[in-house]
Amino acid sequence: MKALSHSRWLHPCLLLGWILLGAALRFNHLANKALWTDEFSTLVFSLGNSFRTVPLDQVITIRRLLEPLQPDPTAGIDGVLQHLMSESTHPPLYFVLAHLWMQLFAPENGLVSIWVGRSLPALLGVVSIPAMFGLGWLTFRSRLAGQLAAMMMAVSPYGLFLAQEARHYTLSILWVIASLSCFVVATQFLRDRRRLPIWIGLAWVVVNSLGIATHYFFGLTLFAEAFVLIGQAITQSRQDPGAWLRPYWRRIYAVVAGTIVGGLIWLPALQSVYGSDLTEWIETSDRWNLMAWIGPIFQALAAWITMLSLLPVEAELLPIVIASGVIMIIYFIWAIPLLHQGFKAQWHSQEVGPGVQVLAGFVLGAIALIFAITYGLGTDLTRGARYNFMYFPGVMALVGASLAAVWNSTSANRTPTEHPSSTSQRTWLPFKKYGKPAILAVLLMGVLSGLTVTNNLGYRKYYRPDLLAPVIQATSQVPTLIATTHNTHVQTGELMGLAWEFWHDSASDSSNKNSPQFLLAHQTCNPKQTPCQQSAQILQRNLTALPRPFDLWLVNFYTNPESALPTSLQDQGCAADPKVNSGVHGYSYQLYHCLKQS
Picture: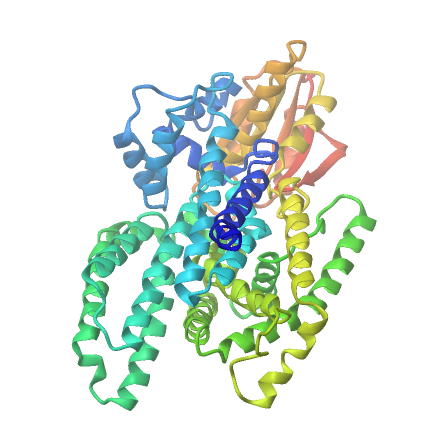
């Protein structure tokens, strides 16, 4: 009876442990890292506000710049839909949920709170841990594989990176897990030549439609699933010509048709995504450049590595960076053969093998799609590590299955492998040296990697206004104007990051009187392609109206030709400070001291 009770509560308690560990990591230092421009987009649109209320081409105050971050009691879901669909490239489901979530909390110093904006993704990231257990159990019919997949989801540095941003990726991951769950069940029914239950088919269609309504790249998840289903149809047709016309396949076709209908709703919006200024950063301008060919490989490799391990390779101290890199190399030299042997053993298992093969085909199909789009269409999806969300749960499930083989390798009275060949018997020999301690080592590395991310020592924010704002405060003792060129609300978000830092500094330090003003100089031309002085002319026009003296900080201010701008500023009595000309994580800047003209 005692053993039975232990067995009954073991897995629920273990899963609860992973949930608590994952929650502790996801909410650790949640509001400590600076907001960056994509997160500002999420906050503004989720509040039902618009970036277009921020004046362009004129000097504005901090309060005016941050106005879109003020909760508006009159803004409803209709405002979320209106502004998002007209100003952004994302579908609205997450933003509507975030709108409802943020209404539950009071503003902080008059603005929406960082913690509130990030807490919903963090909470959804916690939910993905038990969901991962469910996917592992459904795929492999093994609670052990499900537990280890949940463990990996709890501590994965990549998963933590997505969960600590005010973005929609953790919700997308939940839809990927749900869709994969329906998918693997469908492959099991097809393998047994049985009809998929109607309720599972309907659930699959609903999940797929919601996934597309959360992120358009969720569609790549569906294409990867389709590749596996097509392969299964071809295999069955070789054994049974015409198998793909059997009744048990017709339910799959109904799911496909329903998913297409659910996705067609967003077709008009999708047409505006490709070629948008907001997606220009992932488009490859010179596809014959060497870096355009080798860059995606290394970018993808970096994302795969960080799904399992990430030590402080982005720390400020070089010795820490070097030591972290060396430890990670040693870790992967040890872990990759271990995972590979576990994967091979499970691949040949009669019980677990079919699920491993299905998920492996899905992951490989998704990766192939990413590279096909990158090299075929010139849209480099590997530049955004976050886009790997579309197959990330599949990787965690496969790692969980591989670790389950390692765990069982030292279990008493267990046959080394269910596959009869002597070759597969030999694959278990390395496990004899590790077994359960290896799982503890993987868990420890995961926890350390998670702490690396939460302490901003890995997957650091690309934009660091928290580093630039103190430089401006310490350097400028006179009124300050911070100017940037403006193309889209991305640049508005860049300045919002600085304004946010000044706003909260002034709220905590009443003696701080240096409240800078801001200028978003809009330009329709592209300075990277053609001569473009539009923003420079707007800057000059505004400078003449400002009382002297003041300091001018040009932050991410791009003109073409750049040589003309310093001369024109000098003519207006603004002299460049040669000691203050640098950049910090997403911001390049130059200081000009504008004195009275003689």
